[in-house]
Image (cartoon, rainbow, N blue to C red):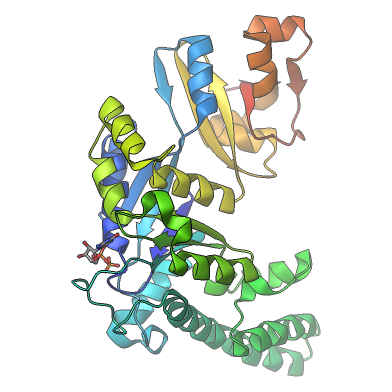
Length: 365
Ligand code: GDP
C-alpha cells in the first residue's frame, strides 16, 4: 500500500495527530488486520462518490479504499550525522511515498519548543537541512562511484554524473531535489538513489484548538503558506488536538461537534485527501450487489494493472473490462440505464483507467 510518513521536530504535535489517525482507523471494521504495526495507521479515504454508488446499488457490503500513515518520530537536528538514532529515522523516510511535515503553529507556554520559541519556517528548515545533508551524502557517493566507472571506459555514466552534479548543486544551495526540473530519463537516473528530498511534501500546519475555524488568520500559517508556495507544496491547516477529539466521536455526535467548530469536514479528512492527491492516486470502483468497493491505483495504470489490485489472477487472466464513468452511471441512474445510453464500454489491455471509473473485469482463471 502507498504510505505517507509523518515527520517534524519534537513537540510539534506529531503523536497527537498520529493518535487521531489510528483512532479513526480503529473504528473501521474493514481493515482490522492492518493495525499490527504500532507505527502504521490505516485510514479510509473519504469519497462522496462511494456513498452515492451505495445509494444506487444498495449492496450488502461497502469497502472504502485505504491509505497508510507512518509515524516517523525522532527526527532532530543532527540526524544526518547519526545523532539520536537519526539515521534510522532517515531510513524510515526512505521507505515512504510522500512526506507529511507537521509544523507547529500553536502557541502554548506549557509545551516546550526545542528552540525556545515558535518559528515554523526555522523548524521546516531544520528538518529540511537534515534531509538535504543525507541526500548530499548519497549523491556524492554515487558521483564518486560513477566517475570510477567512466575512467574504466564505460560512457553511460557520463550522463549520470552530469545529472547528479546538478542535484548536488541544488542541494548545496539548500534546495530539495524535487525543485529541479528533470526529464524522464534524468528522473529515472535519480530515482535509483531514493533521495529523501525528491519525495513530494505537504505541510500540516498544527494550530491551536481555539483556532480551527480561523486558521488562515494565524500569522504562522500564513508564513508556512508563503514558504510552501515557493516550492509548490500544499498546506493543510489542522489542529491535532481537536482531531484527536473528533476521532473519538462517531455519527451524529461527530457532525454536531464539527458544526460547533464551524467545520465542513474534519481536518483529518482534508489531510487524507490532500495526501492522496499529492501521490497522484486515482480511485476506481467495483459495484456489485454483494459489494461496492473503492480501489486505489496510480495515475497512468492500465486496465490489467487495475485488475491486479483486486487479485493477481485478475491481472494474469485479464480479457476485457466493462467500464462506465462514475458521472455517466449516476446520470443514467443504473447500470442498465448506462448501457441503454451506450455508456458502458468494453475496454482492452491498453486502456488507461480514469479516476472514477466503475469497472467490471472479465478474466480467465
Ligand atoms: P510530537 O513530539 O511532535 O509527537 O508532539 P506531541 O504530539 O507529543 O505534542 C507535544 C505536546 O504538544 C503535547 O503536550 C500535546 O498535547 C501538545 N499539543 C499538540 N497539539 C497541540 C495544540 O494544537 N494546542 C496545544 N495547546 N497543545 C498541543
